[in-house]
Length: 596
Image (cartoon, rainbow, N blue to C red; front, side):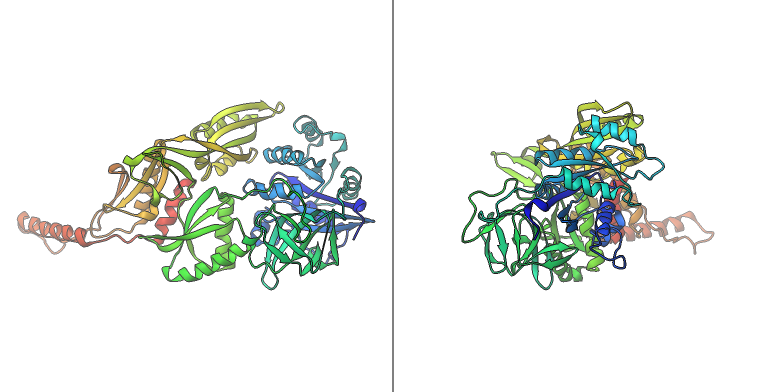
């Protein structure tokens, strides 16, 4: 392995879609780790969803040899849902390439990722990407790097990751500007777990950065968060494939395999040390990742429940942040109640279930975790409408808030402010970054951002506004359980927890959607939205009317009336025994009513 002075550990941080994966491709291609025949774009993104959407979901690492140096690139996810993973990846580096798009300039996540890197004392190298684009405005971006980021724009490297321009200068900047790692190979082992993945044949592959000591085959190691002990079977480095080595030493980035059965046994951010000679204190920053969005998953065909359970168990092997437990509904049968890191995480799980495991599933309306205070002082955390206590027992409720940072061109300022106010946002700060861009900071309920906020923000600003958030605190709210009744009977799978002020609009939208989806019967079907016993919205699916007067031509009106009365009696009886079938599309339509 390389001497510690010749190692450089760095990550690339950027806003979504600023060319992070493409730049990683060029660095890898330049050093010929992979031959041209086997090369493909977004080589570090190995999920189909990552390639299609152009996002990085799972962080990767790769060791790049350059001259006599060993460069360890730790790739980071770019989306706000995965901010804890980003912080652990940043913690395992000494420097960061801060990528800024020459056409779009500094965006919300550029700022938040830079602050994250500064918190961990990383050396930041600004890189201006996409300089080959017609819309590139390098002087404007340099001004933003000076003013918004407070970095020296003279040190910024101008590159085009797509065309491969400026890559050599970038390599030199990595070597000259990013410091070598510090650490003592003779000290007790102290290593940070920044990621892991599951291999069907070898168990869990743990991704490590060593700060002190050495790790080799046959050594006994301990995870400090839960004191579990394992014996190391294999040690190696990442060169796209896993390459076995004799040992890893202080400053190195690599992997170990130690017969660990599931990803849940490994915690990202945990410290690994020697079982026989442990280090005194763990590395800082470790915390449990907590889900913020909750939804229930049901198989479309209730006979597929066992298959869905097997698929969920396999997904859990690969994704430790997915949390689920058994759930059931009178309308949809057996399923699972799941916790997700955010809405993107939910979409990724849904797509993976459908693609990788060929499952047809229904997701119920996503919800956040509310804090409800019962009379007598007891506090409950509730994310499922079915667990909501009786209105009379509730003393008060609180919901989670976020601190949202939005950067938008001044032309769209009015539209963005209107949207935030509509979503119950309270403005706490407004800063003009330059004559064309403004940063807005809002306190806003998380539940309002879950559904259509991001899409609407993009359409109102023609794609120019950027958005970043972090969870702040719980604040009091007016909470209500909205029930949907069909023919007077509540359908549990359609119940939602909502803010009282939005309940009427939400109920009206759901009722309208259901009216269009439910097939007509021989009797009228009332669709109602209610809070407790109070009906707040109603739509009716009109009856199919059989023409009983078709055979009745001429003659007295009393004959016709008699037939109509007879039909009416029959319909009354049908309504008593007739139940409504709810088609699959109705559940999906209710979920989509939020995206309008």
